Length: 187
Image (cartoon, rainbow, N blue to C red; front, side):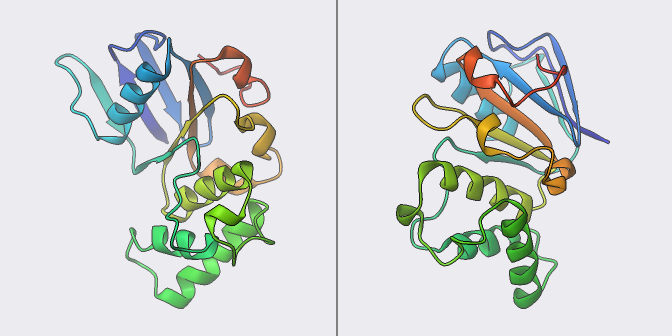
């Protein structure tokens, strides 16, 4: 299943055509953080694509900001349940149980009752991914930033099978931060 197709995106570092299937992971290395933000805005629909640009989404696209993107007034579990409401198809109790299971698979079992300020930056990033999974994203766009743990070091891509339910796209301006994230399919 196609998660995302990009054609003629006017951002330096983005190939003329990119196709990303659900379950696939890829990194795009762009010139700088400004270009990374522009690309993230285009992919998530926050910016209108320029004439001639084609962006086809095979489902919901969710951005995980470099710091995780959690709501500060909710616990980690509260953030996940809040994200699951976006789908609107599960009762609260069922959503909470499904989100708890996702959190456990993402290695968050010991921080579910903590607030974002009470957990490490790496754990906030993992919680952001779990939040996107709870929202049933078909594409998860991962924003990167120097000084934070790399996505390759954080995500247990071999063990957490739920990560295969979405396409993972890392956007970074530092090629060295791609290590451990991509296989042969990185752009």
